[in-house]
Image (cartoon, rainbow, N blue to C red; front, side):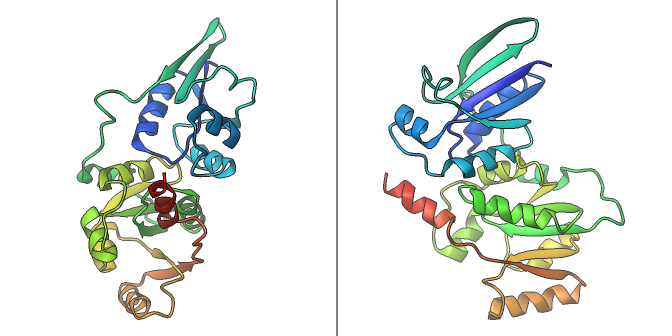
Length: 261
């Protein structure tokens, strides 16, 4: 089997990284992501990574185009350059290496309607879960939410809140645009479908998706908005499940780190 190895920091999942990963995956039968250590990243790029090694490994391993992950050794990083280095290992020919970069024209991002039919029609007996969120600067906290939700349903639909709705709710624009945030979430292997979420009224989302269980952070529990959501979901027979809120890794914290650079 022909194996490709893509070595890089994989610090924050962006559409530019997804573009390079997609290019690499198209050149081999099996793609291994080789993640550079914190020390290697700082030495090569002059800045420490925003996220630690273990979180970067978990995030890149969750992408559907990545088959396996390992950690770069000091030997493999000795002559490296910043960016994503690709090495193709062919059993019938000498290995060759090159630096892959995002295509000049950029990664083609689907328009919103394309996200509405990403999977085959569901089994009538399947339990569909829905988890809405901003997913700005996708991080390990986001992945944990998706993993926890996917473990409790047969099919996971993720709502990506639009830029306008986030501005209305938080008073500021996201650092990553809606189309890019949706593309990153869609690249996660455990996600079955992605839809735009433009309203705080989750009955509208239910009318479009038809989910059986809605997942929310437990910071909503016991609040006026949480009580209202519970009543709305009860009207249509949807179960509301709360997840523990984990503030230690958040888009707000990452925003602070990036703003300081």
